[in-house]
Amino acid sequence: MDGVEKISTEKESAGEEVTKRKNEEKEVFQFYQENFGVMSPFVMESLSCWVDDVGELLVMEAMKRALERNKASLGTVKSILLAWEKKGIRSMNAVREDDIEFRNKKQRRNYHYFTRGRCEVVPDWFKEQKGKNRRVEDRNKGMEVDPEEVEATRLKIKKLKEELGYV
Image (cartoon, rainbow, N blue to C red; front, side, top):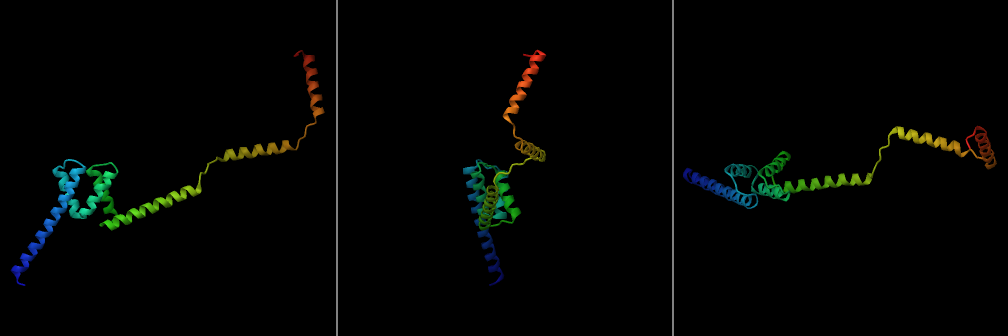
């Protein structure tokens, strides 16, 4: 292959790549306009950069997720894409794996929550007070009262009241 053919082949493949990228961008732009609203030049440039960086599939997925959350804004799309970028997610397979990992973590968290059940926090002073009350009750259990003695005491009190003029 001579130099002229090689250059023309490279130009053709570069042209095909540009055409492919333009088609991808067109689909992203069309989806944005149909679901998010009118697209400004700033939004167009931003989406174009994201398509170049991560690809059409991830940008489309981020837009779909933003819509699922009822947050149809470029900011939400960008935050999803930035989160994926931070995690090193560069493909749809990685997105799916991340979703599965998230669900598994959530299930493990919920599992531990329900197995422990409720735990009531009781202050120390309450426990001490409760212990004192039990001791008093235990002491009173051993005391038996004679009904005749109770009656005699009642009569003495009545007699004293009469003498003092309370009755």
